[in-house]
Amino acid sequence: MKNINNIIVRGFVCCGLVAVLSTAFTSCRFEDDDYFSESASLRIEHEATNVNNLLKGAPNGWVMQYFCAADEAQFEGFNLFARFDDNGKATLASDHRLLRNGKAGIYTEASSPYEMLKEDALVLAFNVWNDVLTPFSDPVKYWAAPTYIEKDGVGMYGDHNFVIMSHNDNEIIMRGERHQAQVRLVKCDRDWQQYIADTETLKNTIGGADIRSYYVTNGEQTLYLDNDGTGTPYLSDAKKKVYGKFRYCDNLDYKKAVKADSIACVFTPNGLRFERQETIGDSKFQEFTLNEDKTALVSEDGTVQIIAAWDRHIAERETIWFMDMENLSDELKQLAADIDAALKEANRNQSLYRIGIGKSNNGNYVLGLVVEWYTNTRKTSSKRGGVALKRSVPAFGQVKIEYDPNANIDNELRAKAEKVINASRAFAEKLAGTYDVTPENYFTPSPALFKDVNGVNQFKLATKLGN
Image 1: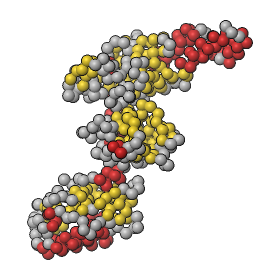
Image 2 (image 1 turned 180 degrees about the vertical axis):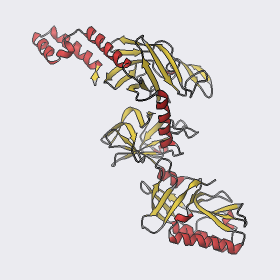
Image 3 (image 1 turned 120 degrees about the vertical axis):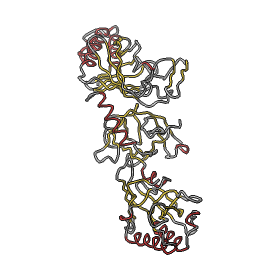
Image 4 (image 1 turned 180 degrees about the horizontal axis):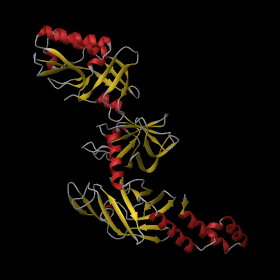
């Protein structure tokens, strides 16, 4: 990449040396003939022409990966789109959530003039109001929901003028002239609305479930992505839609973290990109791509992965996931049959419906094994009872289940016959152990196969969540 600021600085240095040593002039002219055969003003003029031609030479325009000032604003990154014409106008587009006048979330295009200012460095300037871009830098702060306007002088801590730091044929790296956030222009490879649709598909793939924790690992060290502390989950909002503002910390429970940084990202059709480069150990990363088997997001050089903490999601989830009763190991099948026989012995109108893991919803509630049984021969109504189990994650991809002989049972199960209670406890006790867990989808982990590390027990969570 050609660094424009370095070119200018080096020019001034060499010109200063001319007045001191003629030999230095000769050396400077020889070594940097391409750069310094022209005056500094002429060089920046030519550079402005080159960048302008680059801007106008993208058949599908550009994706503007836009950020507000990271240290001041509590915003995710935004994808804007830009096309530049020969008449000094730019067409910008987006469906971002800060569009005004009822357009939030609706694809919108807006055209306005742009300039290439030749200051200490080149500045791409949008000094005329543009409905897509200017709301970020408008000194009047405006929020779509709940709606209010606040005259605070800084608005969203965004910029509409951008210092060009470097460029090549496919990207232009810039920073906001006032608030310094990094903004990147990258050539778009498809129709803009298709880019938005494909990005949404990617976001749903990696954030469609209510998983709230992610591992960031280079194989030797592990850090975490967690809630950003604003009440909005780092990758999802309250509606379980991917968000893009999160906390990068050294403890999965950010409240216990010693180190925690707030960072933002934009999403692409293939993954995500952080505003700035981050590190873990000796590894550096900024952009991630979803791998082919969709098990992880992988950094540019392949040394760092972002992996959904689906193991903790399974271990800590309270909503009931029911087992695939046909996919139980033989001993578990027999114990399930014992529960069914005990229910029928206590009342001929009762029979076992299903067994799950989660929080029972009858009686005094317990978190652990959940047994559900039919209460009539027509199988039109059922009840649930539970036996408490402790679940934890001893290592990535594993869930440990612990059973206490004195574990609580909820009131609904406690009201059953002793044989039903004993059979349910026997099933819970048999589940005790450490399991390697393989989800069908690593970002939305249901169903998931549990295999005892000792090769004895096996069960699979059903594909449909319980109510």
